[in-house]
Length: 64
Image (tube, rainbow, N blue to C red; front, top):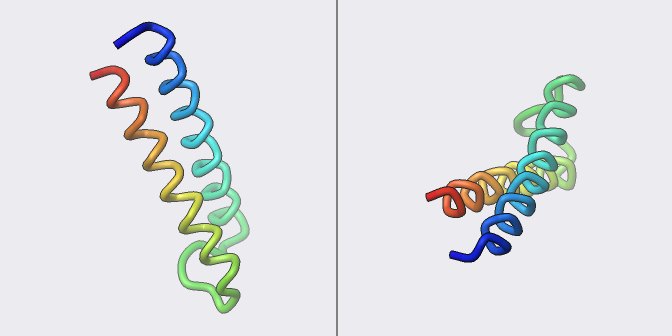
């Protein structure tokens, strides 16, 4: 795998991981983590969590 591809995957992975992490910390700090009566907020939380896991997967695949 070329160096530019590894750098691109790691950078994109870190961006996605930070988006998921920031949203998760914000949810915990406002004590709204988990099922909420506002479906849009819960849906956004799940998308951010999925983005974080996808970013972690990109980093692992680039390093391995």
